Length: 353
Image (cartoon, rainbow, N blue to C red):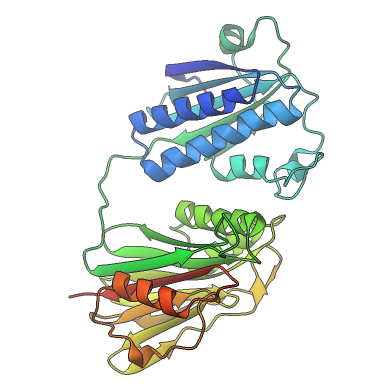
């Protein structure tokens, strides 16, 4: 496929300082081309992983080209083309799975690149002119990775004005990184996907697992919840693992779907009382049962509450004024009912008129 290239950045890779330089150039171009903050962040992570792989596994020398491409059908994308002078990847399929590494690392770099790419090619066929223009010179660049990320159509999603959302989270008092996470993604004006995530244990390894689950929920929010849960289980292999409760709220149909793995507590407060949302046992990234999705009515004045096990059970839902702002209730519960030996997170969503 012939492509036209413009907005071209061609950058050498020689030292750790190049990780930040390349990342910033890529994120800046992504924003210029119309990617939102989340997608621009994905581009930044993708480029950071590519450059890091060159330095750690690719002979320490390489080059990266970041640009916009347009094909014969006028489809546009951001292209990242990275080459190195290393010995290549011995087993590509294994390397694409998180947890595979030939060095003392977590082994999630190439898996992250794959997840953030709409198209990923290892040693792709490229025109002689392109390679001559950008990858010829003093170094013998033998191995290349090409990543393509389609430029999104221009549209404004905005927020769902029928939902009031509040969240509060803190890490274990002895840690710097939070092993818990929460995410809220407004898929369109009617649909919102939200989750509370708890990486096993606390500290750095728990943070890596929970942030990986969070980023994948943002990327794959369009999937049905059972497919999304299976996807999360596959991409987090090689990490410590996590538990999560995920909801999809549709304010047009006034329905809420839920799927949960592990001990994230979830319930609805309705005019008929409390309804518990049941999760199944297991650890995302290690072993889970076939995910189940349950559906509930979610009408104006109903509230959803989800929290990790860092929040104790020493409080009663009937003692909370659910018509208060969800943010106020979240901060109150976190302050008064969180454990001192764990990360803690709570998310409250109220359906308004």
